[in-house]
Length: 157
Image (cartoon, rainbow, N blue to C red):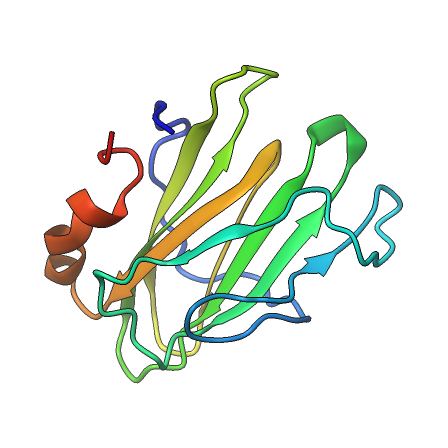
């Protein structure tokens, strides 16, 4: 499952809100899926597999609101993850989605480091996705640092 970090870490301090399924806490169990024509479908192009890294605090006031899988044929399946920060404090988090770069056989991880003020969303997405993803969060960067080796797929191998 190794691979290089592509694109580096970004700062996602909020984003567009999506609508749709998903559940808070451990991850959305019913992703929203769309076909090449962007029409809703019961079958996702990839099955989103992953969730919250249990080693992190992952405050319950910051649930996963949406997992969305789209299938724009040219870009391969795209996976989008949206986490609401309903907390009274800033949320510090990392979200990673596994993908294939330009048809490479070995999958790689794209990770985003986010600083999200109260009332804003973490909203990230990656095309050519395999469906694998992970997310961890807390109310301080120190909380994230202590679980980096356990949660981050880039340093687990």
